Image (tube, rainbow, N blue to C red):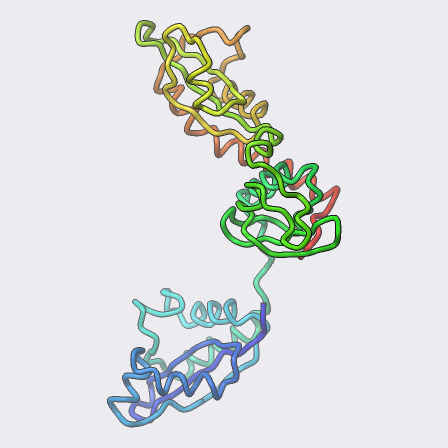
Length: 296
């Protein structure tokens, strides 16, 4: 988060016309952009009138994004920050001043809790780094974004987590390079399958496999049972416990077929991943409290 400015520009062609904005740049540079970018409404007004926007007032703020939102909230104009994409407004100066006063007192945005999916991705990554001599620094916010890593030799780099999960090691010393299939096997993820039988309506089976689905299909004599739905599960034991909770049934011995309405079973499988993510996130939060994640 960089400090910056909330600024108000006025235009000589109309005393009530103002352009309110935020920037972390030098004000002179930002004003020059408004006066020369003819693709934007502010620039079109300059082109049509031959008159440039002028700086009326500005305030320094520690969090420009938050301050701008507070400004518009204080004006009573509910579409923030612009109404229908319009970047200039006609406003009485007392309205502008109310917005500036509010923005001046806005401070910084309150800290937001880390979303569940970040903890889920982080847990996913840690399992795939186990035993490889690579440490995740910070959290994983997207498998295909960028995260920070460090190897046991002290080399630090920033890269796409999915690539490291697929076997890439340290770009300087190659520590941690590994076969992708070995990584997945070591991670211990699996598939939870909802099975149905064409000759046994009303009965279902729930099967858990740590194999790939292809191998599960090929290597099992299922006696006519077919995979109706499946879920890729990061924590197989947790997933199996949760699915029986969602079904409202105790797990049968030897995973025998049970009589459950298929619609109920399908809904349980739809609800499984969100429930599992909440549980994984809760476990990761507890882990972070005991062993804080190093920051990049």
